[in-house]
Image (cartoon, rainbow over all chains, first blue to last red):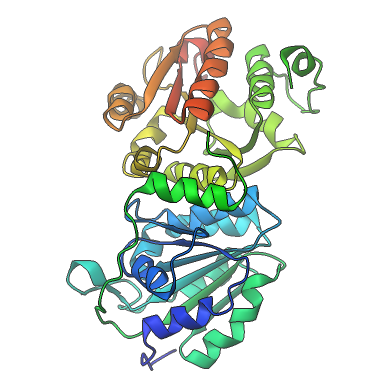
Length: 196
Length: 185
């Protein structure tokens, strides 16, 4: 059981995305989208502003469409909990090029910091393991984040889930574009798909 | 792939008797270059699900709930792949908020919905969502097309695929329970 929650969420995302190479990144609504945007906007990022529960599954669809690329989803505990069944679907689909990172502050940060299920004791990493993720880890410090970073750009035996425990705090927001059509078209252009 | 070629496609080997429309829908999906299929099973889709699972050129996802398929299809399109989502009418209600994703991003979405609760239905629990399916889809900006005969269905799926993937629309084909036939209990 992890008791220390000293890790700053932005430090965690900075460490994850350092030297990201050709990683394709999808971020879940709320703070994860702000974190990913703050670290650095690029055409290879697709930020969600809604559709709670979608992030990891969008990652699955993208990973299946582009088996030649590695896909990283960065989302929050509340967002992933709404799509809990999606962990089962992803585990069964067994993509080798998909990593789900849950930035887990144990709270619904955008709505007044109410405790979430993970804040009340639920362990998402154990759920990932039970679903059959090839690797499902609870990470509580920066060294742990840095240890998995290199793996994000490598194919694995199956999907990976990293649950990173962070402090519950509302940091300054770094707002990505909200025009989802713009984000879609620039992402596809980044992959060489012509805009019709 | 043109129509002449697609009609020559060898059907994947499947153990059960395949109703002609399931095979034809599979051919239309092939012709439309659909390479990903997500589904919550329905008896009406059973043969089509067997066909797509037996097709080595299609990636198939079995879902725990239908809205997952809306998100998967969006991710596939980001990566340049065409996806189709199969469900029965009761699953439409599960998709409502997730359809925001397709709507606001103008992601193509093709849904093939087998209707329950509208024709010789034994189970009253199927009726409310059956009645609400088409209005709910339309409320979320999804174009609906209804197929009452097998002949119509093939043509409609083909046109719905074009509207979805070429005009970036969200389209649901509602497959009449009359077409599928009465479920035997």
